Length: 205
Image (cartoon, rainbow, N blue to C red; front, side):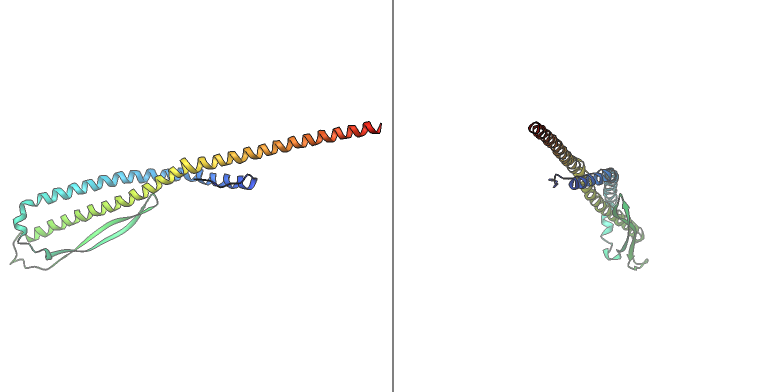
């Protein structure tokens, strides 16, 4: 990234100000990145756990395949899922709340005796499925935020801070050289004036 600057005091002050802003912000951004990295790791574990749990639950119901043929899918549906939000290292993340199921009334006398247990099994399966999908979505959001934060850390640490330091060094060196030249010029002028004065005195004598 090219840093625009001029070889003067005003530009030097601006460069020093921008450098200070980035040097002060860097520890905070690094801390945010670290917190997001930890949360990503935790959420990955949660996603794997829920995916494994869902797989085990589905496998556990395989022996009931014949019974499910008697079951009507219209008996149960997800009516509502409540959501809230919380901040993790400054990133707004949705939080899964209650899952509300709607059960269509059915006759206890005319339906197989296992229907009630079957509904509870389906509720559990649906809940695990929703939690697994939700955890995967949360992981995606966290990964995106973590990548952006890492990019910002790298931009500050590897590009902008060294760039501003280099620009400040160049401006200071230029100004020092200019000052040295100015002093040298003044010395030469004084020496010339002294010579001229001495000559004038000689002529006068």
